[in-house]
Figure 1: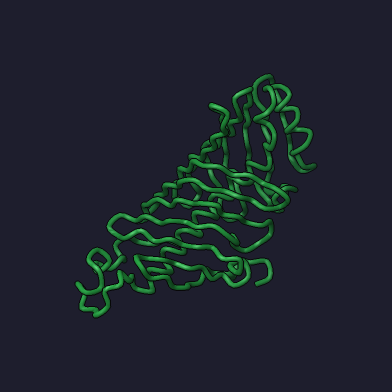
Figure 2: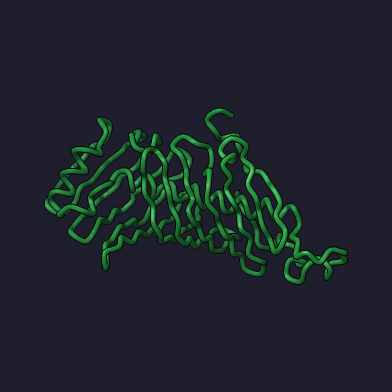
Length: 255
């Protein structure tokens, strides 16, 4: 979904009273709630590529270069992956589609991975799902005892995403946070994620928040609920008012 900044009402800049409303509760129009929620959800979907890569390269940041690449090839390459290794890199070619066991998602395209004692770097070549692929770089680097993850991607639909934060898989649940800057068409803004959890196979995240910042508009906090994976409903808070709005569920497994 694309959200044009030109469609955001001018009253968002001044409050409802400036637009003739009688309420002074910093309320944004309901339509904007849906736009905020859609941007937060779309950003979370984009980050699934990073979660896929997290599964492909799990544990590699703890290993020296040669051992890391061998371990990835041995543990992570499914039978349909063509893995080619040289002295410095491992190339994983997923062809037109191959499942990743840890995530339950099917991906396509190629990854070129390089690993050393400090971390792992993956160069994406049309890597992604059936409807959206990406080119760019994903990395996990260790510094001062912490692991720093980042994505710098351009998607096949023309959008771009730069994200830094943390992401991990545990017992079929992905957890991530961090800051994502996105551009594309008339879209431009920042989404800050905190404690977002997404169970494998679920339609949407079931916990966490996303604070959406758009130029010329007030910040909005989108809260994913325990019921969101089933109902698509999230809470959107703008100013002092919280309302419930719905994300699309047509793509969900049980829809």
